[in-house]
Amino acid sequence: MVLKGEATVIKNAGSHFLLSELPVWAPFPALLKGKVRLGGSTATNPVAVGDRVRYEAEVPDGAGTEAVDMLHPAAIAEVLDRRNYIIRKSTNLSRQNHVIAANIDRAYLVVSLYFPQIKLPFLDRLLVTCEVYGIPATVVMNKVDLYREEAAEYVQDFHRIYEGAGYPVLETSVLTGEGIDALREDCKDKVCLFSGESGVGKSSLIHALDPSLDPKVGRISDVHLQGRHTTSLYEMYRLTSGGYIIDTPGLRGFGLVRLEKEEIALYFPEMLQAAQECRFTPCTHTHEPGCAVKAAVEAGTISPERYSSYLGMLEEDTKFR
Ligand code: GDP
Ligand code: ZN
Image 1 (cartoon, rainbow, N blue to C red):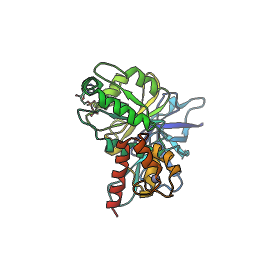
Image 2: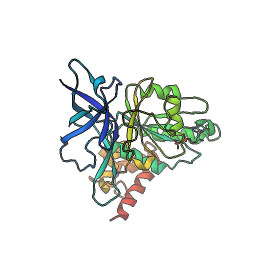
Image 3: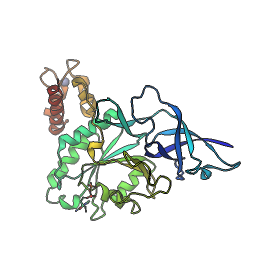
Image 4: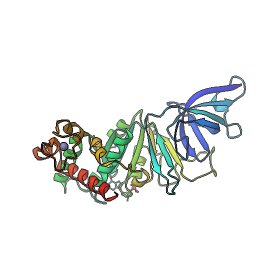
């Protein structure tokens, strides 16, 4: 008989996929069936991790997806509309994009204020990217055991800057275990994207959230796809405590989006709000008289650090013209 259903893509390995009917975690293999409908996409991959799909599978009468195996994989018949997705620009000139993941509930941007020292403008670019993609972001300040006392003022400033801009900031230490329970709780029932510059402790953090996960070592083995295509492999992991994690390799894997000059301020939430009071529209919030954003920076309700990142993005954008 033909079994039909809806499931989530939990692993994408070239033309092979693993699906599971989340929140149930019971993976089964699937292939793409002929032409899969996905309106107007220029992506190299029509199906990505996190995608909701409609599948069909040939199984013995009365059987369920447990009867779907590598010899009798399911067929992905349709990809359902995405709530959001992140892309990486392909490196060649084909102008095609690679969809890394879809339907993400929250992005956790892992940073450390020191070791390696954080560059705020870079974090701000990532936050802008999350805004463009429509993915709520949380900043995870890891390794606090190394600097919270020595750099107490900077830690306070950091909270003020990012919470002031509307982003939750969690403090964690893999070393002391502090904040790990809170992060685990935060991840519950969500599809969570983890991103972080190499060295900030992202792998350690994921391992601390769930000791069965070890992003640096071999990941989770699964018999279904072993030995298959290993390029551009993205995968969703289940946290034993609830929730799902998609790990992106480094921050660069999280494609930065090119924006028009006048668009940039739309993705700084605190500026977007203040900008409604600017005398001129559009306003670049640089030299215009009656600019409410500049007034807010002077009044201290918008942080000078965020404003400075904004100016940096504007300038960089202009340089390309
Ligand atoms: P990733 O490149 O972001 O995945 O970073 P890793 O998880 O490999 O961690 C980089 C280094 O930082 C390792 O030596 C970890 O032991 C260390 N590390 C990770 N988290 C913490 C932490 O909270 N406190 C301290 N002191 N070291 C940490
Ligand atoms: Zn303005």
